[in-house]
Amino acid sequence: MRLILIPLAIATLLTGCNGQKTKAEAKKVSEINADSLAVADKALLDSVQYQTFNYFWDGAEPISGLARERIHLDGIYPNHDKDIITIGGSGFGLMAILVGVERGFISREQALERYEHIMDFLEKADRFHGAWPHWLLPSGKVTPFSKKDNGGDLVETAFLVQGLLTVQAYFKNGNEREQQLAEKIQELWEGVEWDWYTKNGKDVLYWHWSPEYQWEMNFPVGGYNEALIMYILAAASPTHPIEKSVYEKGWAVDGQITKDTTYYGLKTELNHYEHSDAPVGPLFWAHYSYLGLNPKGLKDQFGDYWKLNRNHALIHYKYCVDNPKGYKGYGEDCWGLTSSYSIKGYAGHRPEADLGVISPTAALSSMPYTPEESKQFLRFMYNEQDSLIGKYGPYDAFSLEGDWYLPRYLAIDQGPIPVMIENYRSGLFWKLFMANEEVQKGLMKLGFESPNMEPADD
Image (cartoon, one colour):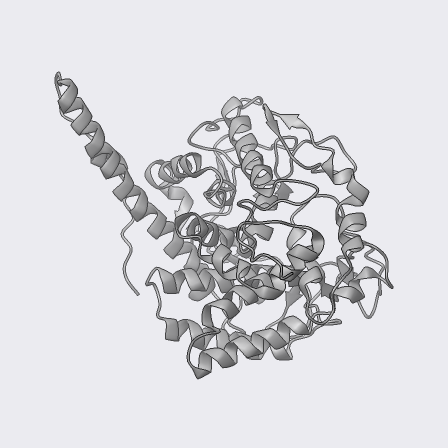
């Protein structure tokens, strides 16, 4: 692997000449500074992508090759969590490994070997009507996420499948081995019984089903949140598809999803909370479904998904700059709230539930939406807060107000960072995922339009 040197003093690249300058001299210095900043930013982007990729490469659970739910560098873990495998986080990790190939951290051959190992594990692991559980043990057996959550988790499965389909697209036109990998991924994708999770034909998808507790978790997924990708994949399934009515009546709540609001001068585009007046959710909602799904130009009868996500990120930025609670550190350099570790355990940070805790994944994974604001946060972290950065990139969360951080990571927070930064830099995952013909058919079935979709045949 190539060594990435992290520049911890970008300011030294931006030092200009002393004394008075002519207009021509000032313009030249400005150009030099802009060029220097671009070079420094590239090095920082390389660094953070390398470190977060490594969570899923060196930090992977060795038996499965998949992502550990969490990695705590302090060695302190709850219960038996050290080697628990996360299905959703593993979907993000599958994509992060491709970042490693594209950026020269590992070879294509190394990635292929890891993917083959992973597919062998996923084929044999517990599934429930085709859906994997939230958590697996290295044995491939389910371990409960909560008491009754010991069966299929359709949202986590959707995040995994999103990653699988990008890997398939990357390798499907390769050599014989690579084509075999793509075929194996197709079998796994076709095995998910999305329609089963309508609970006997209701017009909504349910998050969970367990052979022991059946539908007792009772979580119909409707209204805007992180799970749009689940509905799109369910409509796109070549074997177990849902009807359009499930999307319109379940996810879009019979059109109620369009009841947006304005916050910090920006339209939220969709109603983020069906049962409350909270204006915006945590920022991971703008990331998880859009690691592969390209929101640029993506629209349907309910909303404009680029506007939705860009405004979501900008609202968080403007909120932190405004800093109505007066928390230490908040501002143009330090912003972004999402669900993450917190001072007292775990919390869903957002403007209406702000505890003074910043989660680096929030701003960094928003890079495609807010490139300048996100880069400003990146520079701040690596130049002024390097004690908050460890082996796998920025730690999960910190509070300058509370003088708090822990050297700990969560897969679902680290994973979107290298992937969304790559989408900003090259659009890699958006190109791979959107090229899938079955995905395109699913999007068209639900009424989406996008410049990244082929027109339907007459």
